[in-house]
Structures are given as C-alpha cells and as structure tokens.
Image (cartoon, rainbow, N blue to C red):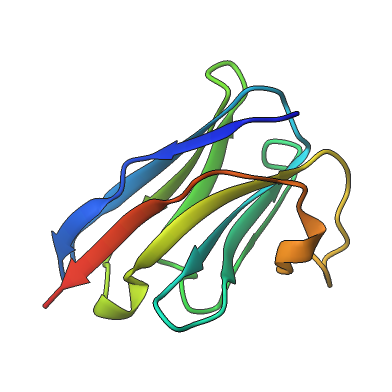
Amino acid sequence: QVQLVESGGGSVQVGGSLRLSCVFSEYSSTMAWFRQAPGKAREAVADIYNAGDVIDYAYTVKGRFTISQDNYKKTVYLQMNSLRPDDTAIYYCAAYNGWVTQDRRGEASAYTYWGQGTQVTVSS
C-alpha cells in the first residue's frame, strides 16, 4: 500500500506562486497531480513517468506549472507560477506503479493510490 501525503497548499493572490509537495512511502513509476474545483470533475494537471523520462501537462497549466520528482527525498513536486483564480482547487497527488499509456494518463481511474489533497486558493 503506497501512502501519499501532500503539502504546500495555501492562499495566494493572482500572479503568485506555490510549490506543492507529495511525499510517497514507496516508489511508483507513474505519478501525477490532479485537481478538483467545487462543482467540477477531477482533472489532470501534470504527470511524470520514471522520475522524468516522460512528462505531460494539461494545456491550461503548460508553461506555468512544473512537475518534478526527487526519489532520494521520495517527493514529487508541483511548482505553480503565475497563478490565476481558475487554479483554485483541491490538488491531489496520485500514483500507479507501472506504465500508463498517454491516452489514459489524464484519467483518474488509471491511478491506484491517492493522497488526501491540499487546498489552493487564488484570489484577485
């Protein structure tokens, strides 16, 4: 059973930055960040395979967010810059120990393990 613990959320103003962290108990080859805003479906933000061999971003965050992984620290990061009000959501870390095909990497059902989430609020 892989345990994931997110941290780093908070409240920032438009244009600000936050760095989310997800500490994992065991290595999983595919990890991702999802987010869920009130009244909306959970959506993929970014994913990373094999600590950086393959990285994908949702088009809404490309160029603003960066996902990275440090296996020594057992942590996956999500650096979020130029934050906007529509980035407001609960952000979740997810993991699957294996290869997820690109067409499924943005689907929540492809991931086995989930963290409890961390709230990000961006105000104007």
